[in-house]
Image (tube, rainbow, N blue to C red; front, side, top):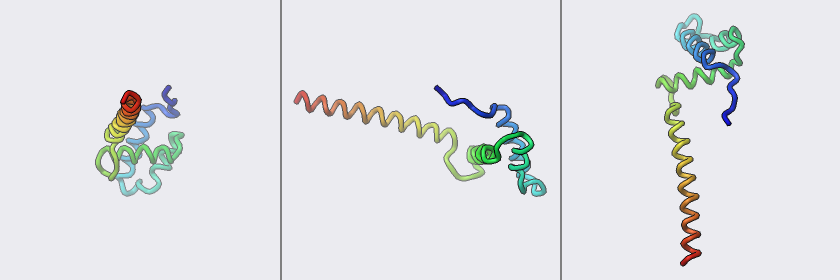
Length: 97
């Protein structure tokens, strides 16, 4: 079962867009995230994380993009399953040898 989201996707997108635009303008860049978070009733650290993720996905900040992170998780899951199957096959072959 997936975890419930505290904030709606529309609110998340709107707040992120507002913060990114405010940070582009040098006059409003200082304290933009906290100010926008307070206006919209969002925790500032949540908004800061959303902005960071958006910047990484856009290539403006170094880091692992969302699609790459999702692919890594998928490959790690597949790797775990294959290792488990391999261990089972090794123990079965040792049993029948």
